[in-house]
Length: 117
Image: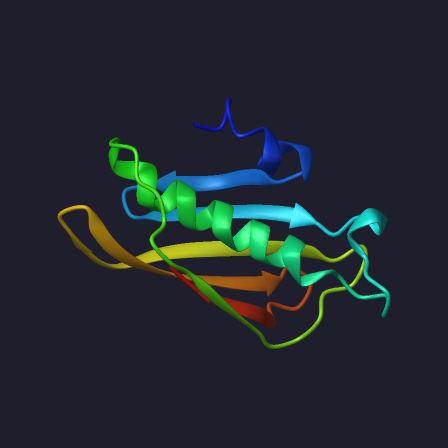
């Protein structure tokens, strides 16, 4: 899946770990990811969480896609921050599942966003 995932690769995401029901990806916030307030545009934080979610859901083999997802932003990320998104399976049944993703700033471990899909 990683080979075909040009979106994640082009944003500079890195796979840290993938196993059944779990994925951890990281990304450094680049200057091109800043919005008008000088903090990271939420879309880039969402993209990191969504990619971790995708790798966790697809860790069993069959292709899966999201039916819905949402994110709560708790703190801003700033240019230069390294972020890590950790996706954890909460429930899986048939073709459905629920995954929680925490996005943290690596330097201090502070959670900047929570995602559920």
